[in-house]
Image (tube, rainbow, N blue to C red; front, top):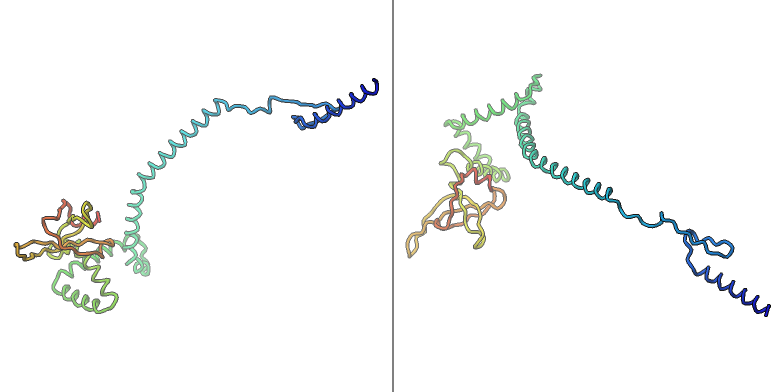
Length: 245
């Protein structure tokens, strides 16, 4: 009986050791004297976020959103003003650069003097071309330029654009702003009336308008013959139509 009890005790100890190997031990699994030390600390449990941190994040998001909206508003307001000043300054410097090197060579360094000289020169050219002698010189210069292969096309296109926005109504290439149905029903295109003609038909004469539709800015486009009754004429001047286009 004694030997059996000792064997039973040894078996029970082996079972306890096997159970100790199978049971997961918290805190590193330290075993001392065949006993399982399963320690648990409240620090190991995840702590729920406090209401203070949640409120702080919400306030920071509101502040960031408000600051971003105000920044975008400032950009929207200042962008056109900055572009206006930049383009104006660029134009003044560009025009001033025509005659400012001459004054610099003479030792006169006054900013804006070249700009005033350029404006005065343009005015004098306009006065000279308005005379009979100036018109003759201009005609001879145009004849020479049009004989050149590449410069002739560039000059012709530039002259048409200048004639379109000219204050002389007799030389205007664009007579009126027009809106026509193009390219299909329900869609409209903005163009310019260049001339009118009368088509003789068996049913009677039909008045047609030559409408120029720019396809690439202003110097390239197509011309369409449209019945004058199918043309809508907005209350826009030619200059306003060019700006809109």
